[in-house]
Image (cartoon, rainbow, N blue to C red; front, top):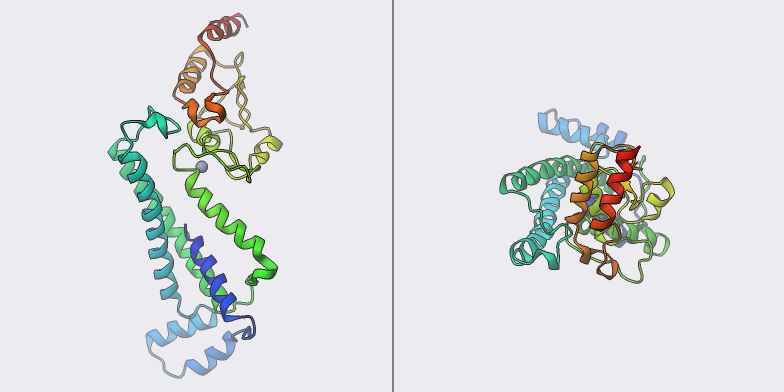
Length: 275
Ligand SMILES: [Zn+2]
């Protein structure tokens, strides 16, 4: 979430131009500024020395901005789908039968907000350092040279939010690399599978792309699942139950390619028992 401020710094730098890219000399500032020995002045000197002038402002901006975007975009999705369309989840939800209890929802906001706070601080520090021409950081801030960077940064930011919304959103024709939101929703339902949410090819390459003939769960590690023969009957039945809670509409052509028909189930169980 805190990434937005990094994008902001890029933009400011872009519009200010690169002409005044004269690295602020921290050493110099330290010498000239520390004639007044008050506490705040010392802190200011230290911040200047570290190329972090104005850090508190950046932190405030990073944190408030992140929370505004989080509650703004998340709040909108929540209101639009989870409140207004709660009575017809089949139309929009990846897992229509599953809703969080209010307690778990609050817990989610608390944990999410806390980790966002930490990351926002980090983004604030980095952005401040970049803005003050910190020498350890090379920033890309020219559209003509680094348009791809802006695109990727903004793209992953937006898709990171959408792919975790639990809402059935299909990718566009011009995004052949982009899986539908259901792809990564599978990851949050079965855990060790379908990790990438912007490029499914990563999972194809690593063998963690979901397969119909494999069982995945929170307790099956490694990303490749287990075959029907390898799991216990309990694990198998749990997996088959889970599959039924997936919304077929969230898949292409409204067909859940991982669904197993009841007729197939008895066959699979029989086979599994024989081993
Ligand atoms: Zn995720």
